[in-house]
Image (cartoon, rainbow, N blue to C red; front, side, top):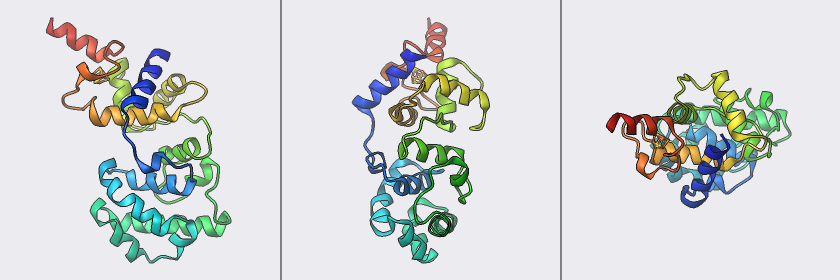
Length: 214
Ligand code: SF4
């Protein structure tokens, strides 16, 4: 487990992608990024994120914007009406119920529309420095390939247990960002590029695939 974690973290630190939401610790900006990234590629979010947070980068500014103007800025991502409504309602709740500050607590965060377990944990980890294991489709995919597991669905408790061990006490954010980037660029679902992967000596899929070929 530790070798796998270190390999992902090292690879991320050398070859991971730079995104503006990875360079901030502002909880509201991280929350916005997680809401935009849901069911959307990072490259698509990259086109809208900076202009969006420059214009609506505080709960107060977002709460007083019209949903129509918000949706207009999110057209290229799709689901713009739903995203605009959820972000607007979230901003209003933050202003009304949390004095305009993103709350530091999973149960509070998950009450916001469109904020699920993963997004809440991402805010806790990346903004507030907690160590919370996280599981989404990318994590499940990589765990299944590397450990020959048959985990399904992001709420799987076995996957959370695995990430608890893999991430260790610190649950480093470079591990999670590394997993996202590996799945997007190397561990592709249809044709994984195992010969370029930092996990190829540790991964069950790569070992089994090599055996089948020999
Ligand atoms: S070695 Fe291949 S299957 Fe395993 S994690 Fe890397 S790219 Fe995916």
